[in-house]
Length: 353
Image (tube, rainbow, N blue to C red; front, side, top):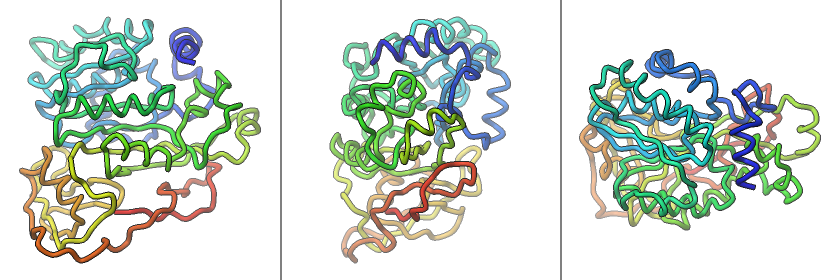
């Protein structure tokens, strides 16, 4: 299947206009500062972009970031600008045509960004086999990926490699396509559906369990949207399957608890993160306004206290008293169905904090 994916993204698709569904398309709600950077990117890099989400988390200056399935390099170049000249970006992709597009414009972008030297490189390789590349354990602050892991035939290997390469307190911040149920093998074997980022998608609960298995104990959903499929033939093929684009952050923090537990703790965001001065969004259920005491579970407390975000918060409370499960947690499908153009189900969203 990997050979067919390389063929699809290297030769079948010449630009994002050739896609048959909107699965590999980012929603239009892009922040202004990201739009301004995209405006400076080379046209070839932009036209051959096939992502489904935004993979630029907060507080990136001077960080080292790995992009899994970097494609034409669009996300890498956005991040190259955001991390600054002292940061560093590594993109990994298996498709020669995409790598050529990405590499050919390194000098172009460094000049655009006003950098005296390149802070970016692209490596050819498989995201399931990162151990075959010259990448050190515990060496990256952040790992991103944008609508690529669904194309992998060994998703557990991808997550294991990511966990190995992240620094303690680092995070994997990525967007991908997920389904509301397990996909039958007959659809997985369909090369077009697989290449369109549909039939390789994980059932959302299988993803949660897989992430926990490799060490990312508490996956946090940042944002999501149901995908519409504007192709009658494909709609007929997938039947009752529903697909979602979702962005997650997975923190490499040892000892996180499998559920959200209440220790009576809280945090206060003091501001100071560029482009997020008035509020900080950790995930879909944690919108933290500046200056306001915000109660949190023990895992959230640690995600803020043991990561690059710690200098921007005050931390209230300790671990002396356990008050039980944090109120409001659940186990239903976590994604929203509020999209009149989609073909999503009527199930109501309820998820853990």
